[in-house]
Length: 327
Image (cartoon, rainbow, N blue to C red; front, side, top):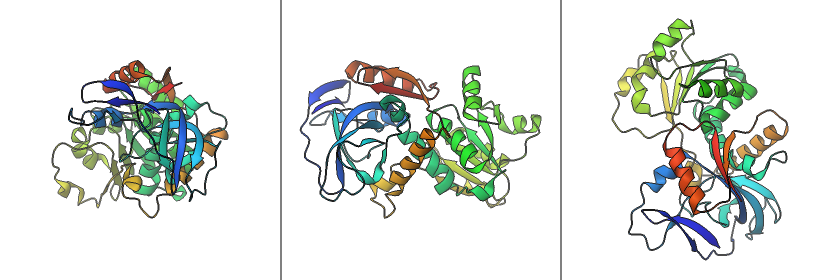
């Protein structure tokens, strides 16, 4: 197969052998990918001592061309989307092996490009809201604060929190374009990233019951502990670079949780198939018009130049929605 890898200093194209699928593996011919912040974060950990370039990439959409002997969820010819496995070769290639338990059926109503924007952010948002924060339909009317809501995860989290539960959504964004995007996704009110306590007071907003922080937790930990409602819950996504005094969460009996989308795949958890179920639900919601796509920029084709450009764009940290690369 043809692959695009990172050799520690630049992206390069090269030929790479790929084995036939076994067990619960699918062999997927890739039609579109998207680039996420985690892509360049992983890239920055790669040294120049690798025997061959490392194939990066999480999100992908394509067609199943072969299946392993224990596959039960898909067949050749199925159009699928998924976000891959951190421990295996990524999606920056013409073909990829992936476990069927973390793959979903592509939305019929969406193109390959539109579909490729959804897997990583969709699963992350779903797991954050419903598996980590344990939000359920019984929580209708409660308030969630989404910090950094104009990005990929926030774009889906707003829609899921509104459509599935009916939460009141406070989103944070800084630029006018970002604020307009959050409102388009379904946020009830959009405030700035800074001075959150003052802004909640100025808008006469009650303390949020839940906080999903998609920004750097180093910038928000103390203020989140201050503004969260008693017995509330906070979910973090990004790595912390300093230690926190978690004792400040005690008086309010605050729950603090982390979300990492790759956990189920890395540890082959007993409930790994839940990611298949999540993706199928997101696919159905898209086809039923309950959620809309989040791709805002598309490059073509999938090649060294466009992957290099996409990484540069994402590293700036001001992306609204998702960036997709298609064939």
